[in-house]
Amino acid sequence: MSTERFGRTLVVAFAVALFCSLVVSAAVTFLRPIQLAWAEIERNRVVLELAGLLKAADAASDREVALRFREIEALKVELWDGTRAELFLHGEGASRRLVLPVEGDGMWAPISGYIALEGDCNTVAGLTFTEHGETPGIGDRIMNPAWRASWVGKQAFDRAGNVALGPGGDPAHGFDAISGATVTVNAVTRMVARHLGDEGYGPFLARCRAGETPR
Amino acid sequence: MNYRRLVLDPLIDRNPVMLQVLGVCSALAVTRELLPALIMGVAVICVLAYTNVAVSLIRRVMPHSIRLVLEVTLIASAVIVVDEALKAFAPDISRVLTVFVGLIVTNCIVLGRAESFALHNRVVPSLLDGIGNGLGYALVLAAVGAVRELLGAGSLLGYRVFTPVAEGGWFEPNQLMHQPASAFFLVAALIWIARSLRHRLVEPADGRAPWRRQEHTGGPGHGGLE
Image (tube, each protein chain N blue to C red):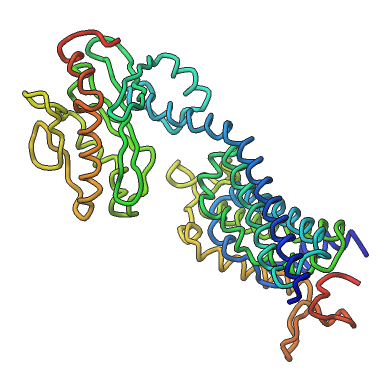
């Protein structure tokens, strides 16, 4: 190829690449806020279900989710890495629920979800994952409602105030293990422990268990 | 150049899926229900129209050596934009379609029309050719999606048409329609129907492509009309 044709090839290639990147960047910049708005509705739907305000969460319309979410109170707590996590509360006394975000590295990709605690800030009321990249059929059994139900009613903290949730037969703190998905289950155990522990919501939850109203 | 034929021919006479059997893969995966199939069809029409116009615009300055790379770049960026737009304006459908919107990049119809038509024709004919082929593809997807949803769930676009046994009616949903393989059978049935309606589309015994029979000056670069 002559130098002139080689130069022209480079110019055309660069021009097309530049044009395409501009098109994609412009589109994404414009569309990103809309996508985030949808993501927030989906997140609110999960929080409402865990807080016990929506029975059939999937069937509820977006408008219903937006309306009912106004009943939720939000709080910010600072985590170990300086980021602020948003907690959600609803209700008074015995029917009070806390919905706490948890996230961490799973086996293949980050896992994120929410854990709900009852008014005593100790008993688990529910668990839902919103994002994960775990092995289909094995690790993704953490999405299985039956498995998530094995967390319900367990105590998150032991007498000493440490997070005691883990896979196993302990009637007070043990949820079901998933055979073949040890890495995933351990990842979930770790991230729940880290978020509920002293590095995360621990101090806030300790005050709550001591009977102070959360602020 | 007959603009009307550019748009109407790919619907049946030169349907990219039924006649050239291109782009079948996504036809299997997204047609369990009619609505995702229609949205996918619209997505492919948009990508085809944009790509054909873009390739046609730069066809004279595109160096031959990197032409495929440039075409794929254009196709890929179009698909990204369509994917993001779907996520923004139809997030539920986007979740049903998952990776298959991204896989439009590999859809043979898109690169096929870019190479065989847009590369050798002006912008407006290329645009119409893109829209026409997209419509032909969407037609096949709509037909397969409608049959699969009707026979597999008794509904169309989510609206109940047959009352299933589970709700006290007479209709027993056909489980085969839930499997991707059923789309294969339906596309085959469509190909059969198309060739029964248009006998001249049936390949002659010597294996020549059927549409070549019509043209005196058919050559590899002349996928277009004279």
